Image 1 (cartoon, helix red, strand yellow):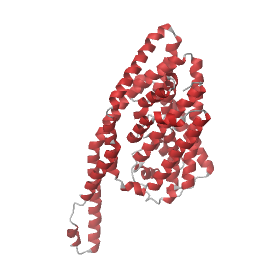
Image 2 (image 1 turned 90 degrees about the vertical axis):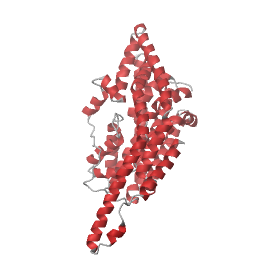
Image 3 (image 1 turned 90 degrees about the horizontal axis):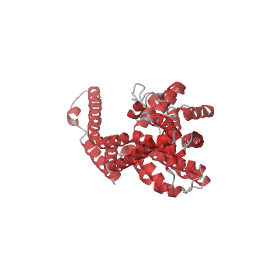
Image 4 (image 1 turned 180 degrees about the vertical axis):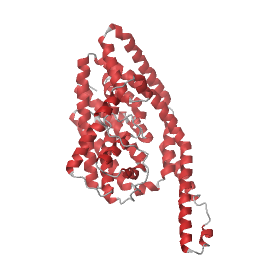
Length: 431
């Protein structure tokens, strides 16, 4: 209901701003006798009006986006203590380091397999349907500013991102992967000292319960946050944008649906997991991720939903936090899809060898990027630079990136739910 209300209000505001766009009387321009002067004046005034129109939309949209900003900030404030608490409990319940290593190995093997499938699917869809060639979008000026800095992820800065030099700093910046690494060490150490560690394990258990209660309080604001996010997007972009990008949106969302209902369904069949039952239990976090375009906003609810489904706390609290750095299926699929879309738009043909090379590079560079704002775009910018594709091409996607991000975020939630179920099955859990 909040999404529908946001679309309606956003459309009404966008329409009213559009109708009041023209601030000059065109009759005055028509009185200019010299045709060249008249044409120059008209172009200048039109450009000025468009700038004013864009700024007015931005000002009005910012008033609504404050609502979503408040909600997302409340979500972010609970992520670090929640991830730390549930992971320490999960590791402590797993027990010895050998068991942690066994579950960790199974988890990472699944994540790598799912990542390769998502990357390959993105390449197949963009090569079969060729949205970059079909749409004939106007290419951006080379002088255009992106606002996104490319990140060529090397082994050195990857390690620097994974191993925290300060766990307090990692928590302050909401960097999930460093928190996960510290919590793994902490949980194993707490479990290894047995009776002496019980007090701190119990404290983490209490912290986890408190954070879930806080989550329930925060979630009562979800409709307001969703309304603000959707309204702001529609005010800025309008609904007309959807028709121009309809083919691109259809290709990408079709790919996401194929990944969820064919690839993930097949994986669930293979491991005898009731796919639709799992999907039904996680529908609330899926809808939340879709409407806020944020996977993180759905994380606390996903943990609760998976435990309600019957997957043990030790598996959920171990696999899910790792999944938010290593198994963002929707975002990963977007990386190959978007890079090839931009190449097609510039009529740049990448050989199959180059595409396989891109896929293997993304297999590594996509990991640990979840803590970076607009992580997918940052990685894509790095790929464009590596394969000599004009980085200005990212501007082709920025117009609809919020909408595409909604699909990516929802797919990330489903992918991590399936990952938790698969690891639980590999550990011979019944649910």
